[in-house]
Image (tube, rainbow, N blue to C red; front, side, top):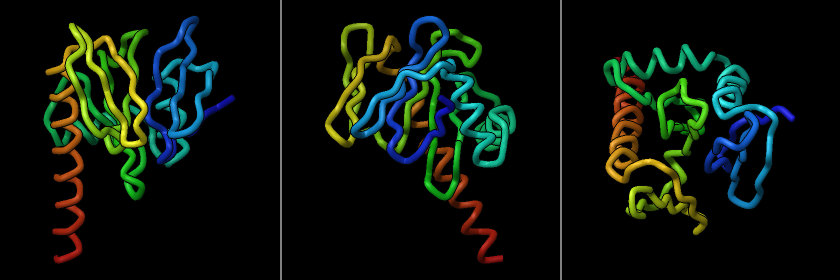
Length: 151
């Protein structure tokens, strides 16, 4: 099954054998593609490639490691990776659906707005930094749209 990210998507987690566990507000799926392939398919579904989205994000934020991407602008679908993009264990988290994050030993608990949560094998400050980057990406992108409208 090919999966398209939508506003219900909370996370795309790396699963065994190159598959993904997709978590939505009220559903969970196992899909046959790895998280990067799910992101690539979703970006193409919305009219771009993941490479194009990453390049655009890097133009806005500067060349950074673990670049967040805007999968779809009008719905505000911004996702960030938990690891290097090339990693087989990379998972992608929906920025707009996060309510809070908490330190959980050397891992991080991500609490979503619907009350569900996941624990990711990523340091707390790394996740906080990713959230900050998403915030900056969203703010700069929105400011550019507003300034273009007023020109």
